[in-house]
Length: 229
Length: 259
Image (cartoon, rainbow over all chains, first blue to last red; front, side, top):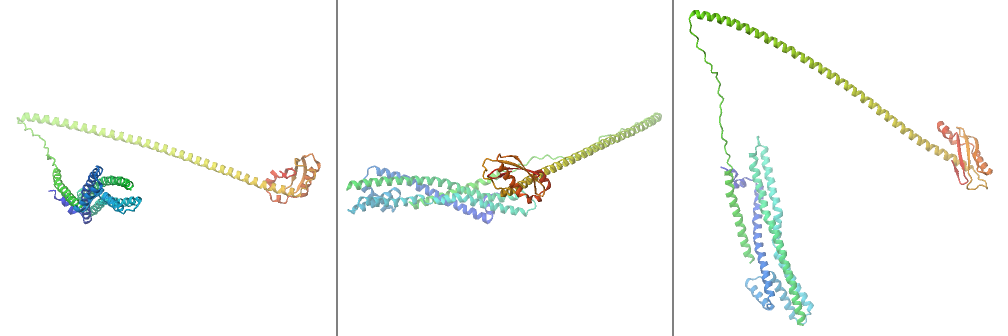
């Protein structure tokens, strides 16, 4: 009985630009939710890995042992993340430089720190991946939705001009279908804003953890290189 | 690990949107059903013709005498009714006439009142116009007076200027012809009074206040007499000359001349 007002009928009855806008917004929403879930999993894993590795590291384990374990893990699953990667880069470089017997301690430390800096910046990149996309969706999709709405309302008013007797019933379906576009835009934007803010803060936090660890690790190596001589 | 993360995420996202669309589609229609318009109960009413419920009384059946008497009575009654009716008619006409007269009188009074009001209004209007005229005239006079005053002030300023320039001219002429005596001192002052005629000629020089040094006094006197004629004074307006230059006092000091 209310066939002409069902959701599908409204979407199907919309003009082509409005339908395109709706499609874009739907895609944006789907993709941004993919990003949201993936980032959520990744960042949570990174955070727990970071804490676990720090616990292991400060439990007094032998560093050579730890390095060997990590190497075995790389052999197994092909990649290591986060603090493990920073630690591996730093320790490998340190060992290489120390084994060249006449290298002065300053050069050893410098090379180690450089290697860790490189690893750190890679890790930062990994933490921040996809966040710009979320930010774009958050800021742009309301505008796209608004564009669809304005277009739809324009269309429905233009239709109104040809009608002898203008009633609310002649415009209402058009406006209703146009407003769906805004609703979709907001639907895509709100989770994206929330997720972007949350994940940006989380990534910042984790990265500062990495940096702290790198500093501490380099101070340990520093002590070792100076006492070993 | 990264790959696994993505597949989970894609599944979650698509599932979420599918669920949402399902919810929307399911939730959309019942809301419309609830919005069924309740029809108001309508009571139909019809206008029926009202018919007078009057029944004719059955004619009385009586014998002829009685009927005659009755007829007689009837006639009398009718005559009387007729009479009354005419009476009533006359009274009504009388009343109508009186009412008409009354109305006419009232209208007359209203008209007179209105005329009086209009007259009053006209008078007031005329009065106001006169007042306005008067005020305008006053204002114009004031303006004229103010302009005249201003004119005078400007004239006076111009005169003052002209007098200043003439005096400067006189001073410079006298100074050019004045040879100060060797005995002149700085603090010496002599005041001369010079009589002039409108052609600019000097007709008399008298010492009003001597400096105490006769040679100094004489040198000043000589200077004025040596000029003899102030040519430029010829073009001056007579009134200005009479006011300022007929008799002129000059203060002589060794460093310069002062008027």
